[in-house]
Length: 168
Length: 168
Image 1 (tube, each protein chain N blue to C red):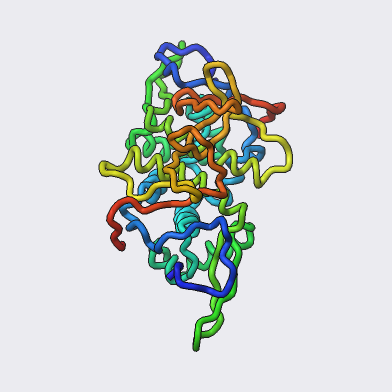
Image 2 (image 1 turned 45 degrees about the vertical axis):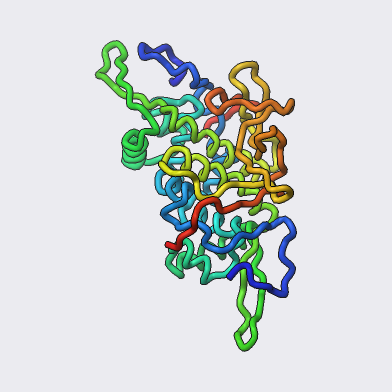
């Protein structure tokens, strides 16, 4: 049990809960991981979030093999994260481009969380992109916020079990 | 090119940037994905964030095969995301438990982003856990915040290229 007394000093900023507070299948995170917890899916989501729409551009920007990219785009569409929209250019056959649905667009928080963490801990130079308010252009960052509007530092964040717990 | 004029109506809330604004290798998100963009790593990080520390508990809670769990824990330690700390119980051999480093703990934002998104879009019942301020217990959620403290709705968030761009 993680909450039994132990001789080593536990980090003060590491809040504890009883172990296995939530059955795996019950956890929103586990479900989210099953849908988007894949390198290629996340890179494609990043591109779509940036406004890239076309297969060839997605292929060039992510470096995904074509068959992998096709499969990931199909899964994004079937999971309701992206729409597949036909377009036709002069003298070409009908092609398709991909645009995030509101559900997919809401994953911008995940894209931003990974980007901010990677920029903070895995880079030595200034971050190449920043998240902004599309109305007005103010730079934004992700933060834990209370209903009161108070921002709480990441190191002070814990978890609380709300529902009756059950074990997987 | 994603920014060429197209007949279909682009979503108003989908800000665009020139495609491939950031070379893949240059992107904090791509680096973060290389380190944590894996189902098992993310599930183990969730458990560590919840305060679970021991191999057998991590195995039970994530359902990871033992060899996979060992490998993932080794990579978390070698990447500086978790510390491996010896402990010894009466009559047992020395064992090890795993505690997030500050760098690993900072991934709580990624855990929260996936959890909140999964709870919002993939569940029909109330979320079983909530993120809280460890000092005072106020419920928290992740939000995009400007320096002024203003919270900006997810649908209004865009990206801006800061550095000189280069192509992968």
